View 1 (spheres, rainbow, N blue to C red):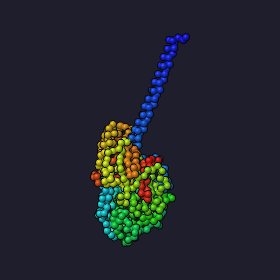
View 2: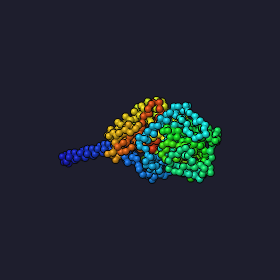
View 3: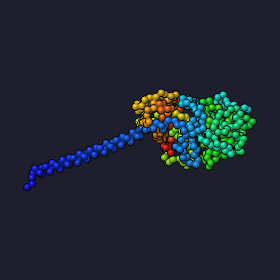
View 4: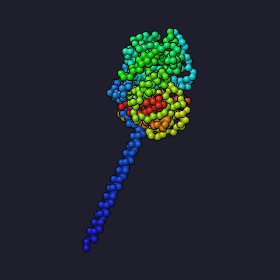
Length: 487
């Protein structure tokens, strides 16, 4: 017979080994489970927060054309640059301060609301033999701050024009500048040197269309149609209404393009040659080129003013990843109205009544810088954002921006994501560069502001549109957003 003590010892050893193995399995199981939980938490955090290099949002002093947006998406694309950035030839002394920029932005916002609220009360532009501006104008919009270069005339002359989804009429300064022309980067367009230029006669359908495109009835000077348009910051352009060949790219040419040939122009246009109107009126470039591009255009605004983006006409190069929301059919035709349903901060839905967004409606605008929210919506957004940013020191407010931080001691910062639910339950996550407005490293602010009244329209501004492919499918009555559109 065997030794009972040895048998007992053997059983004890096997039992110990079994317990040891089981313990190791359990430890491994729990470790793996904890690791999985950590990964899930990290994934959740990455969805709820952006980690941003401070250098990537601060204003740049040198044009970085090799960065995002340098490779244009299609042969029908134009390079987009910031009006006050280093990629546009602007005098250093003429650059406005952050407070001045935001004050101009506020003028635009007030003008948009004035136009929407009082569109019926338009003053007429009386017929006159002289080129002058009416005392008041119904079409008061501030100029935008992104521009493209196009060719005008035969042979073509290159001109840098602000593009603006809130304006209809395209215009440029013209020689001989009967009254006044401001400084611009390129030589002023001289219609007498273009073989394709002609004035538009008074009383023609195109001339009569100026009333809806500018808010002013056209004037008449020796049977030549005269336009007048004034913007929210009191900038204006008055001149002859004409047509000529517009060259967008070497392969994209628009003959008989109607535009304003400005003889009296003053304002804060940043040495650009004028403006290109991308709104809905029949005189806008969108409608004038409808046969060529099907009333579809898209753009991508760069993350910084020292980088470049793109403006593209036509449907062919629209990303399949673009998510669409319908334009609001209950609103007017000039502005691009949309529906905003809800907002999220750091993955958490804000408790905002839907009526807060629906009371005055919403528009998207390429020329407004800072998104304006109904007061109740802004308060909810600001409070939620501040709650998740308590680890960072506050900075001094600037102009309309009251939630600012001092990041001067940080190389990277972590900020909560902000998402918006548009009509059709389309959820759009704003890019990290579209959440903050950086004046300096010690003054980086939440890039949203409240409207002065709940009855003012919500305006989805251009900061929040950065790096997105923003698609205006006017024929399809829908607006699209595609992430990483500048890459």
